Length: 328
Ligand code: G3H
Ligand code: ZN
Image (cartoon, rainbow, N blue to C red; front, side, top):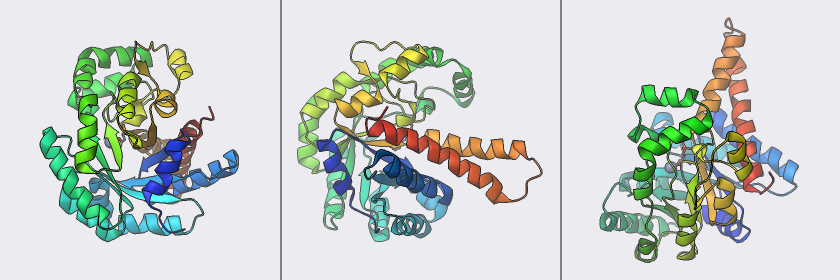
């Protein structure tokens, strides 16, 4: 079916305390993996599973704005799945304009690198542009950092080789306090929402972009405080790294401190309705490709490698979709 407005997916999800997966695509295979994953989960769960496909400005430039958005539109048109197309982490109004011209059905304007007043001004401008076309806007309050802000490439490679609990200990020691200081402040939330008119809020609640393996606890206490001050769908960023469930934490030997929790808590008690996942899907694609090539180093047919990569991504998004529906 044609792309749908992201509001039509998130408002009902908020009421039902479930989340919609918002997955970042970089190529055709990933778009197919997301849509086919949603179709298979619709069968498995016996209810429609909706989907947000995201293109960042970087991904849109990589594919070309028209081709990137065009692939998502065509793939959605061929499916019964309800798909919204979101521009992820735009920080310039020109990018917002491109998205509006290409038929995106949601936009994240990310002014989190700016001082609060300037963030609100930029966000308000994006809201005026988007609302005049009926397109909803996600805004970012506080700052969701990247793992690369604290560790260099060699250190990240080392972290990835450590047992989960040890990796979390090292990240906590070096970055924990800084990440906490960057979280959205509950006292800013009402004014931010009133002044900007945003539709969805990506409030920083202790996650970090670019962690890989579902290990990082988030601050559910802060999330709940933020949620109580807004009735908007909240958005989880940096979700590849977030622990999925309390059971998951236990199995990985990761102790949750006072106020900490998992993605499941964020959805069921914190009002998180849209969950953004990128890094782990990119890793799944790359690993699927590399493993298929290692298994047959004389392979010359791209499709014999791209297919397994696509399957790997599809299985990963299905795991998330099960969690988002509370089926764990
Ligand atoms: O906006 C996209 C996300 O926040 C994805 O974060 O790469 O850590 O999954 P991630
Ligand atoms: Zn993000």
